[in-house]
Image (cartoon, rainbow, N blue to C red; front, side, top):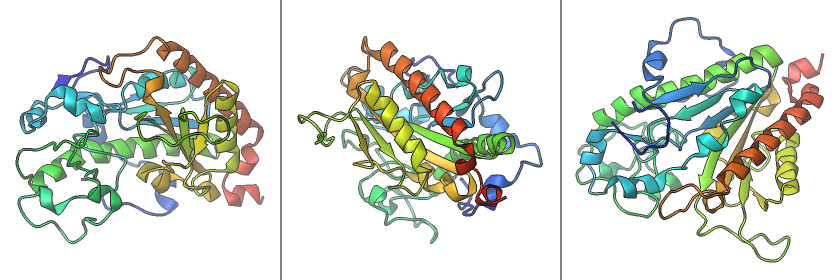
Length: 331
């Protein structure tokens, strides 16, 4: 395992269980697969006490690269890192101190993307036919950015040779399943304590290609908030986050060009008390996109995001009845 030096420890999902009941089910047995992944593929930064009905997840900031993965690629580590949401886990690193868990992937997005369906795969990447249940026709697969990506963010090919489906199944077992089990576990625990949960899926986005903010003089947008165009969370959550960011001077858009990925869609169930919001931060705000070195403004952005978390916590606390399960709200 090769680490990019980001500071964190170096170290086959199941068919998606659609439906409310899977989120509410407590874990009844010891989950050795999750235990084995902790500290190797994922890490959960726990609060000293669970004080907020919020869960934070950083699926794309992992920077521990398996040596065999680097060896299978014609790209060097610097090129592979272009797909990272660099340091996003650090930007939201105050969440545990404030009373909410932070789940962070340690393995990189270029190796396996946990913000995809488990089997969004490009048949052209494999040395044999894929099972019939594989989704090979999604827009993400067509773009080369499936669960196992074909290209990095700079459009360069990741692999020299074809992959085996067995290799994908191993990555899913070691990384994908435990990551989503950790997310579900944190959601379950928060639901049990507060009666509702707000999952914040944390990302960064390249500065190139972003739309202009048409609300004022044309300027590049700083943050994009995604709620699946109103489907994944109560309006209070995106409204509060938007307002808090704007008050701090950031330019914000909603659902354009990022409306929310698999995590937001899969877990967002506001009618049953589970709300999911995706946050995309313009990388140019805090990192040199060529060298991936932190900018001087990194600390201020982290402090501002702490303020946003605090504003969101206050807002949901005041409106908790509207955010709980429908059956509870009707009582």
